[in-house]
Amino acid sequence: MDLLYVLDLIGTAAFAVSGALAGVRRQMDLLGVLVLGIVTAIGGGTLRDILLGDTPPFCLKNETYLYVSITFALITFFAHHIFDRYSNALLYFDAVGLGTFVVIGTGKALDFNTGFIGAVTMGVMTATAGGVIRDMLSSQVPLILRKEIYASACLAGGILFYLLTLLDWPHSTVMLLAATLVVGLRLLAIRHNWALPTANLASTRHKEN
Image (cartoon, rainbow, N blue to C red):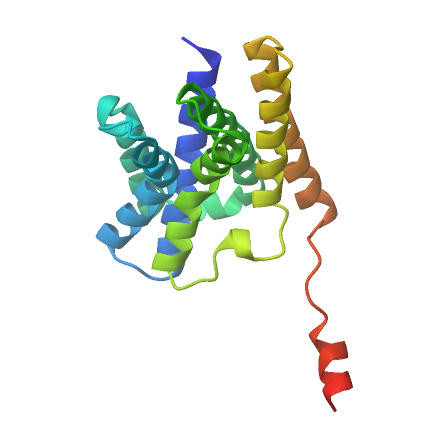
């Protein structure tokens, strides 16, 4: 079995758990938890395929992604305390999924002859759009709009993927390096609490007064 496909399924499972956990913490019922788990896991790739005109989307061509999403969302609903206990481990799987989704999305966009911005955008969208939908449905500010190093790590990976492809590097090497960059940046950000800068409202208010 292709390693990228295995990592893709691992990322799908991790995203499904994170979405389902968000539903559990917002005290949603079983259907709500399932919806959040599924849209988090497959929402980004589905939106990517629709925008690229590749229909039906990947999850309807290969329903394994749906089965994995549903299964892990159900497990989370009935055994969410287990995932709470191992929340740090889940972050690592989430990071792996993030890197995998970026290279899959960017690579697919290039196969559809998109330019630089289109390819990088599709990569970032594949990795983050599901989480945006999850946060909106659970009444939270989307994670990518907060100060965490998340979407910016995806952006860096997508740019590296595109540049190395232009240099005609072997495809497997390009995928490995781009995914490693995304995963590495995300894990370092978690470990060292890295964050993007935010506007200094205190100084602005002081000047106004």
